[in-house]
Figure 1: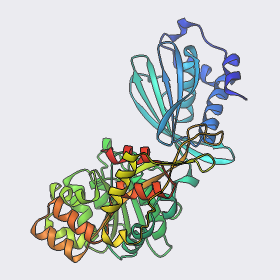
Figure 2 (figure 1 turned 90 degrees about the vertical axis):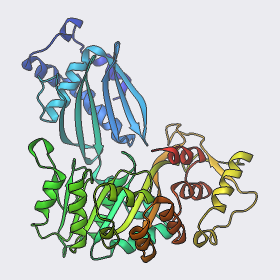
Figure 3 (figure 1 turned 180 degrees about the vertical axis):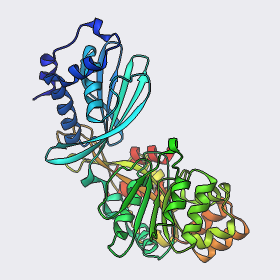
Figure 4 (figure 1 turned 90 degrees about the horizontal axis):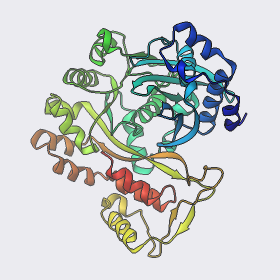
Length: 429
């Protein structure tokens, strides 16, 4: 059924019914056929559009439904405001939430068969002055665990990650802002390490994708089950590989470092702007500098950029300003990398056009830009003597690390993404 047809089919309630409703009334409204149909169609359209999130938000005049596709929110549907309580109640029933509690935020999840696939939806409700806003994160198990190549890892970066993942112990840290794909990268590494001969345990907040063969646990700070407490107990579970959702405090940093030093592979995330900032950040979190070289294997910084639609992207001659910027970044590549990069003087780039397949956005999917710093004897010496970012960056260049912006420029020259996307991501903190 087309979304427009749903509006005419909805049996809306009177304005007076926007007064506080009793639990029984919520249940009745949520189970009315048009409302169940609205929610089902909304979910199906979001999955078909490859959206990562659905936003259900009341405004002063209507109920607005927006989908986040490739990191950008797009308006999808406007419904009469009167159906807002019923739509929210239906989602709450699916998620086993309290339908008569509208003053406090709630979290839940449910699964639904959509488009022939079992999709998980993570639900968050939030009270606003205009009513409850609902955000549903769409978790497609088939999309969750990706191959390294699909993430955007290639050449030197791919070789370095694969080498570190094969080590019998050590700390691998992914860093970047919220929504930069850190967890997806860690899942890809976990998938590589997930064998019947090893015990893999994760601590997550929340568990986003269920992976067969891995013991996944969700922390619950409200009852005292934190990353630090969970990590202490994990070490009694005879693990080989541990994933900790995030290193947020001194205790978790200390426990993760010690676990890496005592024969475990430890994967986690950290908040820094780049790969070279990981070492100073660990020191800020109280990790002794002499413990970092033997514990840390890899620091991975990343940002997400949208991929140009392969069906409609168009070739273009770069402006003088863009051309100068690209040539400058290529010139500044580490010598180990630069020798393999050949850029003709009349090089072309690709720009967006827009077609039916990409919903006229010009983009289809996302890929990550990476900078990856590995532990070396030279880096270990710097950490022990003078662990500042400029010295660390010097060593990073020596070992062939390219910045996220340089990785993006190389992807622009390959026709994977646009200059605008790379510049936006490079400025993201």
